[in-house]
Length: 171
Image (cartoon, rainbow, N blue to C red; front, top):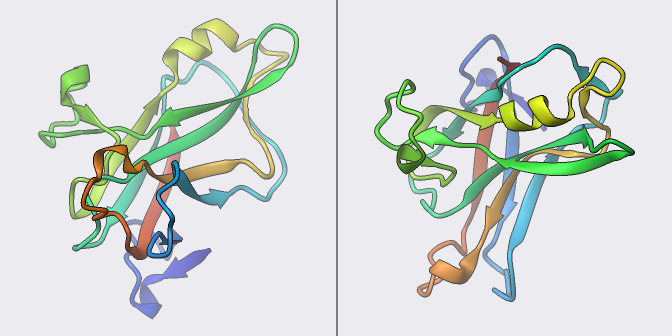
């Protein structure tokens, strides 16, 4: 849902952000569990040769640091469109220029606003062509939060709350 700073929600740019509400308190810990912000408009075709899709993400204080963030896109595999998900990474040391794999995390291990990005450069080079651009399709979980309890023996992720997204951009 969209939200505003007028109602007390965090907004990074302009007047609105997207709010993802989640509730893992009653989760049975059988497997991964996900909450989505689904795209409901017309298909968006991403023209050109972008390297990443980025978004600012707000993680409130007290949010468990083990949730993982993802982004979904549709790519052409040569004969049909296929669905791909990408981790929304951020630099663990806060240095956005340091994109070394050892410095990237898709976990919600910070508080406040952080720029997160999905590296799509390999798929753009492999799949992108003018007739079949990478796309965001209706019904797609454009952003999603995943609770993967395998590393959570104390079940610290069994909480509820909200995470906020602002200023989606293709770079």
